[in-house]
Every structure is written in structure tokens, then in C-alpha cells.
Image (cartoon, rainbow, N blue to C red):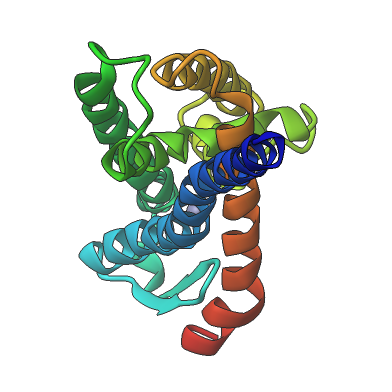
Length: 211
Ligand SMILES: [Zn+2]
């Protein structure tokens, strides 16, 4: 009898561990799969805007090069092409956040489904702007936002730091739409998945498809 209940305890423990691992695996996989797609779409934003203005564009996996007639290459066009990449991410972020809010506003305690994680992944585009805190006022990050900041007559660092602060608030709001005691690990795993996916794209898939 004692042996039987002991065995049941061990099986219960193993099942709990497997459920926990599966729960972390979902955000990890979403991070791995979606982050490279967002990098690709960001570059598509630059690329298509350049094409719209008649520039000759060359698509690379992590940047676009543009050439063409000099008269088409005005400062305004330059600023619009630079802002198009971050704007793509901003649209995904907004759509993802509103979708996640709609999905989870009335069921915050519920275990997030794959659909919830997809909406979360879209909203996590805002994470790009945390890079604002990795730059210095003389060398602000990300480059696109610093360029646009300067182009609209503001100091180069202004937009990167402003968007960085916005990102902190937005991330807090996103995380608060997940169950209170299940935030740290799933979001850490999503971040890890995102890093893995980004590395995979930058080192292997991206250079192979768009050298
Ligand atoms: Zn860009």
C-alpha cells in the first residue's frame, strides 16, 4: 500500500514537471518563430517604402541598401524610408496589444493559450525600443529611431529614450495580462526563444536567403 502511494506520488511529480516544461515550451517556440519574422518584416518596411519613392533597393537579411537617382534621395525620403521599418513593428505591437487585451481582459487568471501567446508575440515588438537604454546620448540606439529623431529636428537621443520609456510601460501592461504567478518564467523563455530565433536568422537562415 505504502509502495503504491509512493509510486503514484512519483508519477504525479513527473506529470507536473512535464506540464511545467510544456508550458514554458510554448512561449519559447513563439519567440523562436516570430522574432526572425519581425526582423524580416521590418526590413520589408524600409524596402517597400524605398521602392514607392522610386529608389533602387537591395534587400539584405538585416538591412536594406538603397541607390538610385540623386534627386530622388531627398532628406524627407531618407527619413520616411528610415521610419518605415519601426512603423511596421509599431503596427504589429498595437494590433497585438489590443488583441491580447481583448482575449484576456476578463480571464487574466486562465492559463494562456497558443492564441494568447501569438497576440503576446505581436505585442512584444515593443521590446525593440528597450534598445534605447543600451545606447549613449552620443551614440543612441536603435539607429532608425535616432535618425528619425534628428530628421524631425530633435536631438538624436530624444526619440530612442522616449520610446524606451514607452516600452517599459507597455511591457508592464502586456505582462499584467498574463496570470500573476506565471509571468517570470514564461516571459523569460519567450525572450530566450527570441534570442535563439534572432541568432538563427542572423547567422544561418538570413544570410542564406538574402545574403
Ligand atoms: Zn531598420
